Image (cartoon, rainbow, N blue to C red; front, side):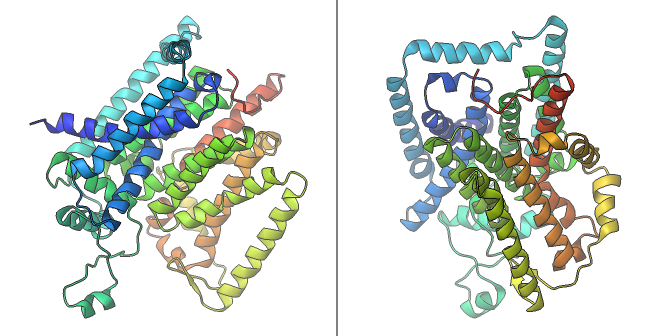
Length: 474
């Protein structure tokens, strides 16, 4: 029998490999595969695509009334991955593959850096590796701890694992009237993606393990670091600057807490949303059908992680509109925001409930608690100070043509958070420093990446060179 240390890597390598191959297959031309940061992009985004594909297949098996097992879940995914690999190899000549591998290994060695920069490069790599091993120790040794993780997410995972298929969860009134034929937890309407990851992990292990089943949170966080590095490289940063930026994003304290104390869906929500925004941003530069497809898949994955994912996905629309309609884009955006504000006022006057939040025209933002969370407590270190400073000093870069689509997404996300805390019943949860931090976490990784991109462009302008546009060229 294989040990857990072999079962888990092999079991999760299958959907990850499928995701990587899907991303590689979507890239056009060999040059795109070995250009700046594309190897890291394929590895990082591949995990998210593969994990989402895994959840879709498990949903399909339940609809077909097929029991969950290693064979029924992992078998078809492995076969699809092998077939896709054969197709990619057939379409790609050996010299192209060797060129891709050499480019990736050269970047990993820091070959383009000076000797002193290479020392810092390897020191940072060692530091990140050590940090991730420490987080891995936390994830694999701590039992499922967060309260909401037990009453909202793991409940579904436990039931679906024991039954071998998905069953619906109902609200309390239907549960009482069902006479024992229905299942109930604190959030029966929450999406199934995260619990399905836990189910798959336990199926790999062959038993229920409330510690090891949280390994997807660690894998997600590691994969996201590849995405951050690839994004910064694509934005024009040199390898060392991109790696240091990756270290900064990975050091967000509250994000690390959500890795170590895994079980909430907020970190997956933040990662999928950031990846969706980056994928849309990549599409604005290289408007191919493949890039649009990847962006759509990640956006749908964002919706499938947590209920607010619907609204977070909608915040991507302004940047899409701006690029799709270059002449009338701003007019459409302003008109849409005006309609949205009018709708908000109408809904607020009618005491409506949207996604569980009660809208009421009572503008009373909890300024003090929000200020404490963002600027005084240690949840974000200096993130919000840096964002304000960069927005002020780098305002030209914020609205520049290469960056403005991403800036628009960030601005829309900030507006969404402000509306939630200013107009809904969520303000009551801000003072206890729980909901405000978990909701802000959804935007924080993307905000960090955006700040680093703007800062790099600002430095380029100070040095007297034009800000390097987003490009896929090597």
